[in-house]
Image 1 (cartoon, rainbow, N blue to C red):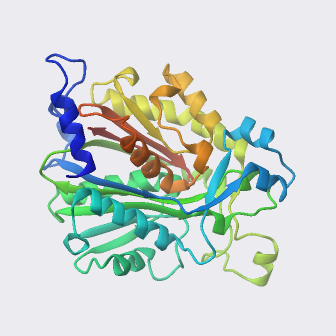
Image 2 (tube, rainbow, N blue to C red; image 1 turned 180 degrees about the vertical axis):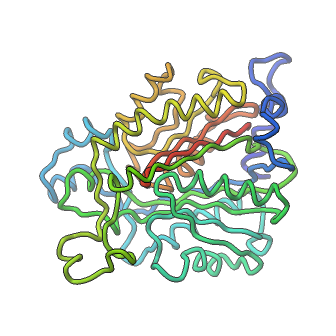
Length: 362
């Protein structure tokens, strides 16, 4: 039985008229323009983090920082680090296998694979090609998707559209990152944040289970310089000079990013909920991008919610970019924090600048 199936048993134990609204109740509230032709449901979840751990104490020996400084400003205590021979595709494959197993599906049944990542194995070919090969998903097509830390939400929205439209019967959506491969461990502001990991979600038409309801995404290219890797692309090809200047590492203007996130995310949450007839208090669990605990605290205050309404694991995994939401979602589900009838909201923001939210009815 799929791990997602236990939610149906929980619902059977609720008394008549209990306070949880069922999936069909929430779906009925959605504007017709926000719905596609066929309900698309979540059949499986998976997550993987590498074994290596980089603690704050380890960073104290590498850069001018301290455990107190890191925890006070970010809420992070440790983060996971991939091994020297592990690439983004290796992390993605591990998470994908878990999602397939939880759904009871074989790799050969997959039709579409979308991989959200800012740290591909190489510029060419697409990293999803390595994932497809290692999974043995011979019938599947797919592509990489780059939207920074918002990548997983954008990939879920894209897969939802393609599956609901009938182009594919199922889709495997993965967010995977080896952020340590673009981390400058001499830059205190960024190296304390980043970690490695992967998460996956398997979607399909029909059946029972959590339903994807609505999505809302956006970009503001005017903020593209706030989070960037300057070199390595066509505008600034890699050279001895760019490597010497450290321009292949991620650079971030932290204060501006903080202000952007705190001002943008509450409005994003309210907008997607209002167009579905809901308010923040109606959401049972918000699964946010794990960028910085102080950002999440500020967002919770602005929405009038307690942090207990949020899935938070940044203290143990740091910022894993597009992998952070699926890792946190899988962990919350496995811990029993989501029951049938719950309204779950995925919320992301990141480089681009980009932002996005996905509403699910569990």
